[in-house]
Image (cartoon, rainbow, N blue to C red):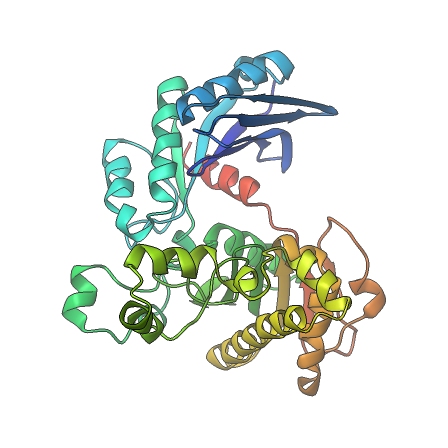
Length: 394
């Protein structure tokens, strides 16, 4: 009998990422990406085994994109009619205070995701497009929403609450929601499994173009760096991370900038890109190594922010057993890992340089046996995590 599979869909404003996953085996059977939806020329890439099929042409909307994807499964494989799909799992960034786990998508759940669009204006509307189209085209299987915020829904009140006027905060649902929760939950669980302990005090550093940190005690999140939106926290590819909110008032008064202009500035034109013109860590590092002072400063600002979160989360948890690096830069940038651990050397954290320099897709430890904190690299797999969460409901 064919193993049960889940089709995982991550719908963005102008893109659809998808993957057919075998949750039990932990394997990806096929994957792909639809890009530049609504532009003059779109691009679709579908991978199955050794076969890669690419198509360039107009993709006017998400419905057209998903129809083309389903046709590629039939043409290139594997045929979805023979794949024993038991669910479609949808990534949803913002679940607010309403979802502490995955949810079967019905009209009420879809409406709640729609109601939360003001808290996730860059993401939730796009997710809804993908959900609507997928439910129409694949109406014979349950659709499950898996929320980025769910892992952090149970944060302690002292961590989730801003010191904002309570009436205003309650009326407009302003609190710390976090993001990347699916990744943090997956990676922190994998770290516990790797170390054979479920009583860990650990910090997970999800360092990609978007970056976030979490503090996890005994498998439960007790703090996270992203807040009401994914803007808060670490320095990112295009986002400021932590910044004095009064910078907004200053730019309104002195630069006569609109809310939309400041939103774009903070979310898309800042971070590494704002400091160097380049939002890719690899490019910034190359320029720093070539002697460019501004690129080196950007890396130092990035590291300084990381160090502050590691220190504060260690205090919040009352100790630290493990630090885990994950996501694009976390998994692949050995220099970044080495520089952060070097700043933690006064606390007895030590890196095995040889292990740190190994490139691998496997979970691994990169600290020395006498390090006071275990340092790990664990590849994240949000698609597998979404598929497995979807399976718990079907």
